[in-house]
Image (cartoon, rainbow, N blue to C red):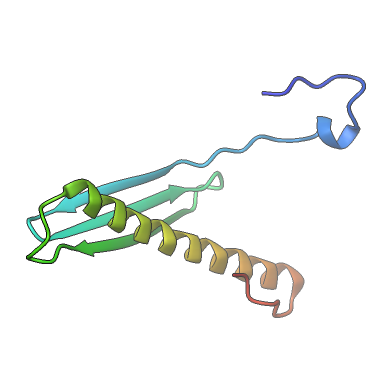
Length: 102
C-alpha cells in the first residue's frame, strides 16, 4: 500500500482501496463441468453467474481444463451482468438512457 505524504496531491491522498472477492464453485461428472460464480459487493448486493463446459467423448479426462473453461464462461457472464447493472444505475441516476457499456 502507498504511504501518503505531504508532497502528494490531495486527489492522491483521498484514494480509497476497495476489494472484491469472487467465489467460484465447480460441479463435475465424467462429461460436464458446471461453474457457479458469486460476487458479493460492498453494498450487500450479490451478482451470480454460471458457466458450463462439456468434454467430447474422444477427449481425455482433464478436469482442470473443464474447470478453466466453465470458470471462464462464468466470469464472462458475471462481467456482462456487472456491465448491465452499471448501465442501469447510470440511467437511473441521470434520468435518461445512456449508451450501452461494452
